Length: 482
Image 1: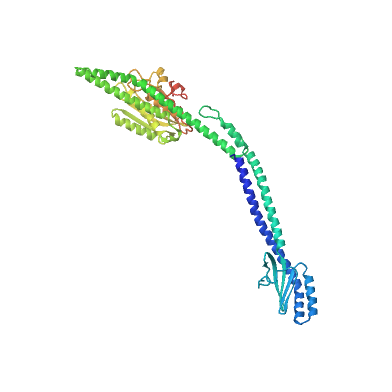
Image 2: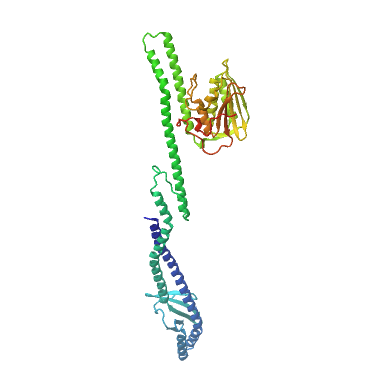
């Protein structure tokens, strides 16, 4: 059932009930007013007839029949439209319309009462006079007829109001719901799964319909956003599987070869030990590669809600302490300015620092084989700066542009080729920039990450596991910074 029909039926049923209720109240008020008017008329007539009634009773008491007859005729002629009954010790004088002699009269005086004589009812008023009681009566049928007339008119009005109010309410509801029907027609053909078309904002002048349209657009926008995130997550999962399969193929083939070698009977002990060593190395490489791929996938799926205030100085101090614990021969110096706080994802920023330090430990050793690393955390204008410098052989300028791409490894590298990709990913996620230059003294390499101190909005680029292009697509980094 349409809303307009529901409103029309509801109003069509409610209005007659309200009319009947109002009519009942009106009839009660009319009946009360009529009784008051009739009672006031009885009081006036009783006051006017009281002198004649007293004269009549005196003449009757003095045994003057002729005078009593004159007083009685004068009394009845004066009564006009009311019935009169005078009760005295010597008899009862009555005339005009009134209850029969058998009707029981109340003993109250001075107050109008209802007297019933069979099927008829009367309004009566008793007034004491010297030597007896004066009663005046008026029939109650006139009042009843007027109240009945009012009731009939109320019922007629209710019957007339039912269809009229229902039709009017239906017309008004139909007009008010017209914008809702237009919104329904505009959105009926929308399928968010197959079409990107969305309803345009339109002011209808009806607040509820405008709010519904706005809510509908918000829901569709959230659906689109969630669908995009779901598609992104699926792409990430597919790319993870593809990348893992591609990168795991070589070490698995090598492990298979070594297992075949170990299966040879009579294999000399030196060859067996060499095969076992290769197996352990390949196993460690596979484990490291899977861990790095997992971290890369996590970074691609980070939501803005996970961002919070992160103190880079404290985070760097923790990361440096961990490096010193793992490699006690390394010389790691930390120069951190306190209170450098950025909005970000703390696990991702820790991953950024860990991979920069791991890269410096692996490739930044001096000719004597000692890793001398200097870590600096500070501010530069509206940016936080994290720098990691080493004393290694450095990185040729021609190789720096491809350094942050996936699976880029040096000729003598045994890593996964994803460590610096993770650094670039987390930098992009936090809307920053990363670059590499020569070390402070012209030797080694210096990696510098710049992050905004007041970064807002959604995370930055998050397609590092999916994308196959290099870092040149990622918001201007990696690039060399001075």
